[in-house]
Length: 175
Image (cartoon, rainbow, N blue to C red; front, side):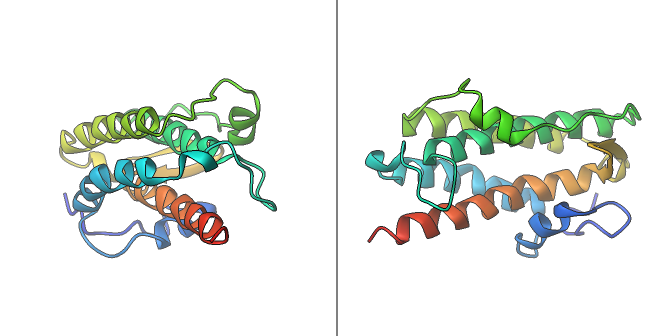
């Protein structure tokens, strides 16, 4: 499998393209592995005093953004598993605003959030490393959009980069 090949137009649609565009060129497995150490370090470096803060015009607390990124790791990893097997069952979308607003997650402990993200990313890397043959090219449907396993790998990296950029902007405006 060529892990340097970016998703093409036949396998990456809509807002997925914006997230994929956030990822620098290179081997996506190496990028995901580098993020495995970088992201938890970033999470732990966040000011504890800001974890429950909402910075207008944004509507989520800092900890909610991190929880959302953990949820996205779970969702995209599950989709990758299903699609890698050739499963053509259409998967539903997920409403991240419902997840964020329902109150099921209220963790403000940076270390716990960092460890959760690390564990999820490690699990997704293990899955992606064991794929064989054309599994990376398999395409399935989620939330009404066709998406490849390759795209999901790039989305894992790009989704985080999107939110990290926003978090950095929010926290930079404080000082």
